[in-house]
Image (cartoon, rainbow, N blue to C red; front, top):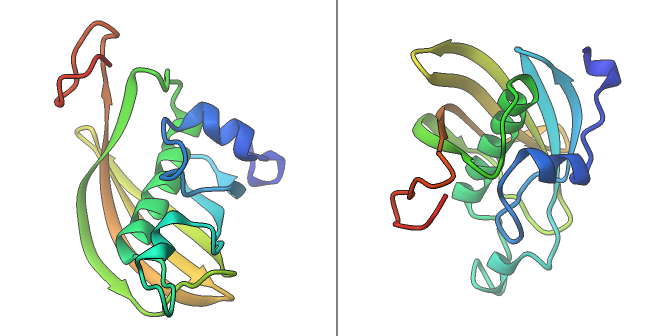
Length: 162
């Protein structure tokens, strides 16, 4: 599989990620180079629920949600390579290093999510991640994530059935 023959639209993304509205933050995968990198897209619209309070007079996408969008792109890179059942698989953040926010992200922006796999060791994936708008860096960070598979009868940390 090469970057040229990848087309992950929202329908395929929904089969790979457990996230749903309003926390699903990836609309399309633009390019995927397995075991290496992914480029994805988040269309930022005024209809996003967080804009009601962040900030009413000048809406700005919260930085933590930009990081979450990058983590979801990283999960898509991981899940596109590793078969899994999204009904019993959770992708956890385990670390964020060097996060920097360099430009506000506003309604109407197209957030381009670029994630590169740096290494995988002892169950931890480490990524270099950058979000841009119109070619200008909005956010960059190193992300660390892990995958947890639950037995369908097993309870999650919050007591709910997995």
